[in-house]
Structure formats: structure tokens, C-alpha cells
Image 1 (cartoon, rainbow, N blue to C red):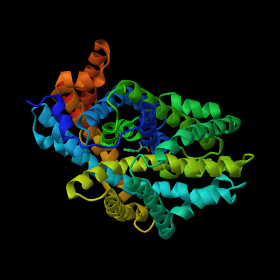
Image 2 (cartoon, protein in one colour):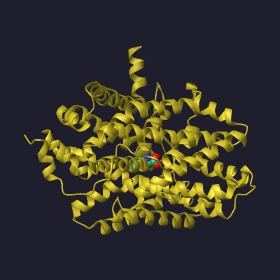
Image 3 (cartoon, rainbow, N blue to C red):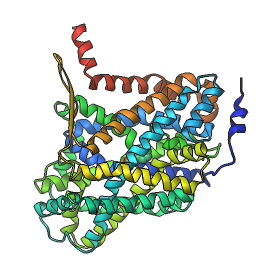
Image 4 (cartoon, rainbow, N blue to C red):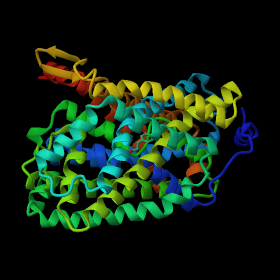
Length: 479
Ligand code: PHE
């Protein structure tokens, strides 16, 4: 049986974060992104508010944090790309090397997510010049809507911004993760935070702040559907960058002495805070202007310009805000493709630069599906549902290519990856190995083990079965 040292003998000399603080910054950079500012408000709006937020928060605490600890731990112990890491770890604890599939799932999920992530980040890029030219000054809600509609209906414009964002991402990835962006996060994250606070002050002034808060924090469980529960859970994985090897790869650069538990909790807290702040900005603006909370993916692009267009120094703050949003998306996008990059470099023995160029081209191409799903191919949709005598279980309703990719990755692939991570770390990895990595006191270790062994896997499984109508079926049989 290989001992713990033998894993290290496989590990090549590799990059490491300069300190614990840089790891937390990089992991926060990965976690905080479009998921918090763009996606969280719009899926909250689509799922009726408070009850969705409560389920999401519960998922962060009970599934997200323990799985994040597990994923970082696996990454640090394995020390490679997700596929190799899982194979090595499985060998170390005497299990099948088929666990490499977990790494594969992640490499593919990250690739697919980046393909649409980059298109949305392209919207944010497009808004930077639009904001700075004062295009939104004094516009009303309808006019702002029209501006957004015009942007997404133009495939060429979207393609240009999407291309630019892919180039930005692959440029950083080609230089290695320590190539500068890590330092940028140090300044940009606090700045983003400050701008959100300024926006909250504006939101308070709209007169609908109370209404926005109660929408976010007053749970009305009659509004929640089985799909809502699935997307709350899926989003917990998405927003924390879990279940696809991103945090695993980042963990592989983590020095041995850093506390994984503290880092995970810090990252999860910052991530959640940014999402809630974004919600507290968006919904008061929605209600003050008679807008629709369920407006979909365009929500922040239709609400925030209204705020900026009507506040003093709005042009300045608005430009700054979209620049920061682009940076937040940028630090996430590099982590989305990092698993695929490290894996391809090793498998095809290519340089980092070549790998980045090839993968960049492939993701760009894949991204065209999302570009066209907002215009030329917007009528090309699919719907699937399972209808049983216990109810109708909608899997997808009029889903465009973008909706489909988002559903497949966030609601299926990431939770599935997370489930496998929890099972591996909780049940298959030798306890002495996980204890050695986590180095927390025995009580906390037992709590963690209980969460990754039972709570996280069971919750993921139940939510999956629920979405498929199987829970309703069983309940019917029992009654
Ligand atoms: N967490 C990022 C966000 O919220 C997205 C992401 C998902 C990044 C998965 C890496 C891995 O925007």
C-alpha cells in the first residue's frame, strides 16, 4: 500500500501560491463573478424570491462549505490536474482509477460553462463604453430595456465582445495563474464591494428598499417549485465554483500548512455577501420602476443602468461598476478553464501557451451557440417534462441553447461532481489522510465528516430525485 509520501513522488515541481492570503484571494476571485451579480438576482427573481434565497443559503452552509473543504483537500493532496489527481488519490487509498472520470466531468463542465460565461461577460464589456458615453443618462425603464434588446439581438456585436473576453481569459491563462491577476484581485475586490455599497445607498433612496428586502428575505414557500429547489442547489455549486475541479486545481497550488477549513469559510462568506448585496441593489430598483423580477438573464443589464442613469456621477460609477464586473468575471473565467488546461498540457505534452490558444479557439466556437441563442436561433428551443399522475415535472421549458447549457452544467454536472467529491472524500479516502490534510480539532473533523458522508450526498440525491418526480411517487406509495 503506498504511503502518503508516495503521492508526493508523483507530483512534479509546480507553482504555488505565495501565501495563504493569495490563495483566499484567488479562490474568492474564482467564486465571486457573474454568478453573484448577474445570475443570483435573476434566478432569484425567476423563482419568486425569499424561499429560493433561504434554500440557497442552506445549501451553501450544509453542502457548499463541506464540499469546498473536500475539494481543496483532494486537490492539495493530489497536486495535479483533476483527472490525474483523482487517479493518484484512488490508487493511494486502494480504489479504482475510474475515479479519474470525476476529473473528466469537471474538465468538460468548465469548458461548457466558459462557453456561455464568456458571452455574458461580453455583455458586461459592451456596457463599459456604453456607460462611459453616458448612453443611459436620463433613460426610463422602457428605453433601457430597448438598449439591452438591441445589444443582444445583434449577433455580430455579441460575437465581437465574446471574442474579446475569450482573448482576455486565455491571455492570463497562457501566462500561468500567478501571472498578475492574482494581484489585481487584491485591489479590485474591495473596490467592487465599495461600489455595491454606493449602489445600496441609491437603492435606499428609490423608496422601494423595504419591498426589495422583503422580497429577498421573506420566504413564501408557496412560490417554490421542484425546479426552484434544484436550481438553488445548482447555484450553490456554481457560485462557489464547486464540483468541477477549479477549486481542486487551485488547491493543488496550496502550501501544506494552510488551514483549509478557515479558507473555505472565508471564501464562502465573501461570496454570499456579494450575492446578497447585489440582490439588495437590484430588487428595490425593480420594484421602484415597476419592472419584472422574473425578467431573466437581462435583469441586471436592465436595472442597473436605470440607477446609474439617474444618479449623480452615474456615468462615472456606472463605468467603474461594469469594469469591476468584467474583472470579477475574468478571475472566474480563468479558473473555469484551468482544469482543462492543466489536463491537456499533461495529456498532449503541449506548452501552456499552445494549450491556451487551442482551447481558447474551441471554447470560442462553442460560445457561438450561446451568441445565436439570443438572436438568430432564439426560436430554436427544447422542452422536456415528465408527467406523472403525481404531477408534471418540468425538466426544461422552451430552453434555448444557452438555457440548456446552463441547466446541464449548473443543475446536473456540478452537483454530480460535488456528490462524487463528497463520496470520495467522506467514504473512500482513508480517514487518516483526510485528517492529516484538514488538521482541525477532532470535534470539527467529525462534524465535517458527518456533513460530507451523509448530509451533502443525501441532499444532492434527494433534490435530483425530487426534480424527477421520484420523491412525489414514493410519498404517494407510502400514503
Ligand atoms: N463561481 C463563478 C461565479 O459565480 C463561476 C464558476 C463556476 C467559476 C464554476 C469556476 C467554476 O461567477
